[in-house]
Image 1 (spheres, rainbow, N blue to C red):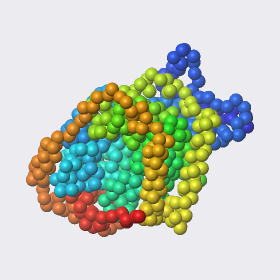
Image 2 (image 1 turned 90 degrees about the horizontal axis):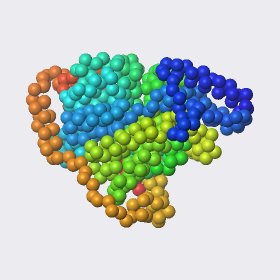
Image 3 (image 1 turned 60 degrees about the vertical axis):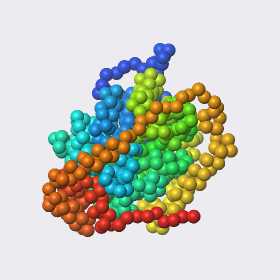
Length: 557
């Protein structure tokens, strides 16, 4: 790109920046030593790379979606939390909000993630242990008691039974008197990554995709601000994928959901802004920054050139980041504070829109209140003290970061070609489904995980406190333990709720839901009716399991 084109881009950026900043008070931004800093830096003269880099707030969005960066609006501090029962988790949420958290993120326990009630025999010993137990809309009422759902953005990390859980959230909002149209937040709902990495599915792929399509249609019509899909690379990376695989598999899944929306006759410029992403921030600092920058650029190009998106918002890749749980160590767990801070800084320098920082003790148990506070304060130190919010994309133009960004983009594009070729019809969806059926994704991730483990055991990869610098004065941690009384109490509460329901209304609502499943009608309205009748999560999911069957992953050797 020549100097004139670069200067024209700078002028466009300046106009966007001035317009955005005119809406609020302007202030000077200086280094700790008092040196004034500009909001953006770019080349002075010709730069052949700059067409791929660009200015913040314009295509290809390598440097971010907004001209102002974090000067205009900092990232949302969204701490992931959930344990025990709804009352206990509600107390933790209020602590997070009191201490400066900007949004909520719900962690569910394993029975909930698998669409089981707390008194299901499969749930024995698991209730409340890796998240909060939610059996019905009544639990959702308690979970958000005293938290106005029309004013707080809420993310829910659940995919298999995401749609019935979302219906419970909508009913909880109704009972607060909050119209659905005022709700804002994100539901994960990403079933592709379950088959690829996390393995928490309920049904075969096609019924899951049918439910997701119904949810997309419903949200476009009724809840336009809510994002019904958060395409998740986090769990793919945690399973052992490389940065390039996380990038490629995640965006490929996103393209599959775009194809799903288009197959429903939805306008890409209307539904695509409701797609968001969820990435891992791992310990290789510069590679992670490059991954985030490449993700925005790839998504924008494909949305424009392949799927015909015309508007800026339909081309934007907005993403949440969580620091890498897999990087945490049980040995010398205080070191995890350092790892988390470095990973969080990479997410910020990569332009994340919201962020969760892991607690130092999460490798051992659910976070204690003290560890959760340290994790929250980690973000606040980065936001308030480091001054990294002063400059948009401060690493833009770095020879190393730009080369890594280009390399990761090229590797992702090569993987996209493989996936599309597997499907045979040129669509990403067919390739993903074939890759799931053939075990291709799991094999690719397993080989990457094995390669990493081999390097660790040979000592080629160093982890402080694990295979180097192992001596320590550290004492054992006091960790959060979930009492068995939580499970017993949940059983008693669930039995009491079942006893007072109108059985005829409940049975009629479940029958109407199954009838909708057998038709081409949108399933969200009848599911909401079942939830209003206090149908439990297990009852809804079991009715659909009986109709659609279950799914078992084919054995691979």
